[in-house]
Length: 271
Picture 1 (cartoon, rainbow, N blue to C red):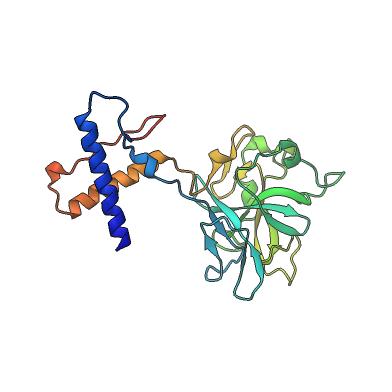
Picture 2 (tube, rainbow, N blue to C red):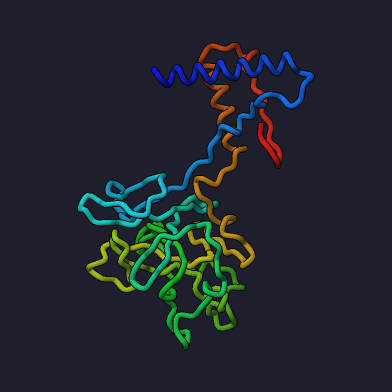
């Protein structure tokens, strides 16, 4: 097979390079110094559609903007990140009037925009008409792990409240809010028969992670709170590859005394 021939060619090339470097050990630089991490590609992000039914939801590692479902409707695909503490999924969204639009998790946040008021007198506690945030699925009201305003307020520390037990301006919009939508991205903060799906909307930057019941200060970066599946560095990839190679050597019948592989990691390179 072509794959077997390719693997054999790569192996022979590495053996030839190693022999040449041994025979000319007094020369610098070496020919193609072999570094394992050079061959490890970082993983990609994961993108998902808004379907709540796992059988209908589209999941891909390709950075696609849209996807057509079984009914022929064009559906947006959203980058998904994960809470570093709870592991739950956070869909990266931008609310634009009555639409949910995908947004890049790595984009820079405009702190002033994230704190803007929704109306002049401040009585409307809904997110602004165009706002960055996240969707969290599950935790339906009335279920065992369901969220309510009172239950979530109960896990917030005292510094989040003023003397009248109202949330301070800093944390006024940190609690998740119910949002309704369909698979094409049409959305509203008011329930409607035309919008069959529901989730929780959290504003970004994330000040409160309800899945982990943890409050963050304004100096904590989003990447400290949330992570994507492509966020692991080459050191993690090198470690996993090393363990896999040792396991394969054992399966191949290599004696334990000879089943050895040197791997090290520092803050500048892996080998």
